[in-house]
Image (cartoon, rainbow, N blue to C red; front, side):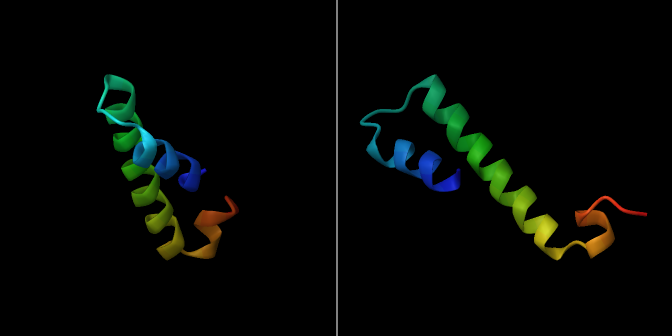
Amino acid sequence: MLDTAEFVLKHCPRQTTATIDLGVKLEMLRYTSSALDKAPEFIKDGSS
């Protein structure tokens, strides 16, 4: 999924509302993914 978004942003010749929104969401996804990588296992799998 990240690769697809990066591809679209790289190959889009100009910035539009859609590409700006995609870029923001891509950064949010990267941040969330990074945070989850650092989270304890019980948070990742949803168990208590």
